[in-house]
Length: 168
View (cartoon, helix red, strand yellow):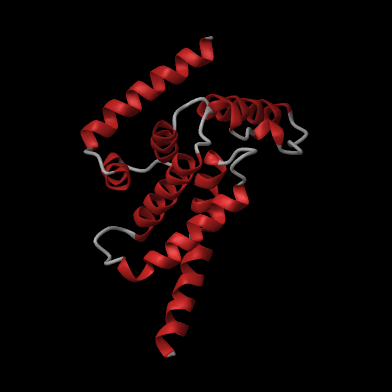
């Protein structure tokens, strides 16, 4: 009984501390056919189920990112619902930008970046999101299960792809 209470408390602490990380990943993979709430709940379930298996070999944030990304990618594969046209875009949300022109320009650039990222495949989305979160290549590699050198090459290719998409 005591272990269950401790496990639940640990889960609540972790989910509170990393809710923004989970939300960011779920937002990136959400779509009209894969609602944000469903993805978020699925990630939390997987964190709960995997909590006892976390050995601390990596940072908790690395494990959370990996769990969230793998859960969302698996969700899309399992449900056959991946593709750029279904991805929820920031434009679809009701956002009240600040009244300044600079704030409006920043919001517009952010919307465009989100739109372009929505056109990427799930693995590319994960890589560029981690890079935009300023994660070091070695941590991105741990999360994605690839070498830091491979991360660097893929990030470079994704940036080129985004630049090309922006020009089109």
